[in-house]
Image (tube, rainbow, N blue to C red; front, top):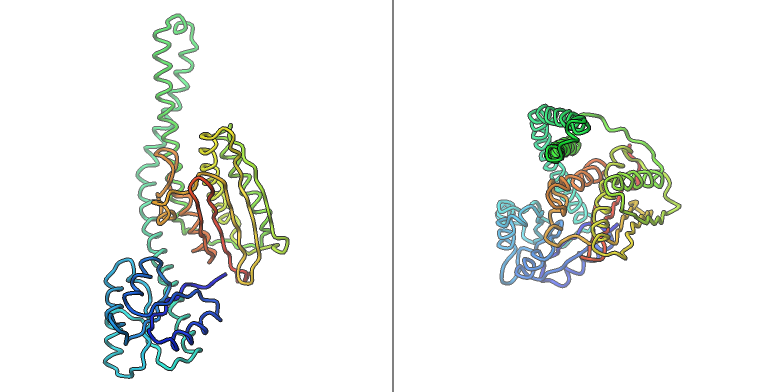
Length: 386
């Protein structure tokens, strides 16, 4: 698994060669710019995880480049390490005051450069985890409040709607009503309306449950060495059969390509299954709607596992309708969904990412092409959970 993208900004070919060699040997992905203007243009196209920035450059110098990065909300969180031969304390203070996180001095020592990069990447990852936990804590508070305020009224609505439907059904079956077609028709319409109220109250209750699952922190997770193939098969079948219970006309071909060298992995089985179910359910939805549009379309879901040096990769690829470009940046945000109102809460993918990334220390990415496919890839660390 490749390491994060590092952007090196320096106008000196020798410095670029030394740094590139050092970082590439360690597996980092690299981008190179020779001045501040080029660097800002590259960052606008693809944000690096960290920037090594030379102070003395023609045109926009390192200080001004850093100042512009920190003034932009899209780039203000990228760690910047200045590279300089200057030993003047004033220059170091100036760089740190405008947002740099560190300095490395020329000529470079490979061990020093790598150590500083790794430290600041770890700090950045820790900060992101803390922010995510704060957001989830806030969401948990919100969800608890919503549940407290809405569950009792929803139960009241659902219970009385169910009773009303039962009573109307008995009334419709009575001999007096059967002799009055107009009254019978009217009561049937009322029954259908009340039945809709009942089903929508159930959907609202399910939304509340999903929010609570997303934010819950009320139990100690139970880690187990789990056979990956079995876990994936069970989660896939559970999601597929659950989807078919809602849409009986849907059919799916499931194709597996499991790496025989991958046996057991350390996961929290119940939570990891929930993440896999959310991904499969998302694929089923895309495949079902493409199937409705194309009579000859055959929905397929490909499951693949591969063992690498540092991670185990799991991919779920469907041949569905793809993900609209406007949603790709925020796909894992809570309440973001490709489904029309009433058909989804937008919490499934957010829940899956939380479980895979925050809980299991892994990574969840996706690639998609409109009308062709969507592929989600899970990367889990190889080392067992302590």
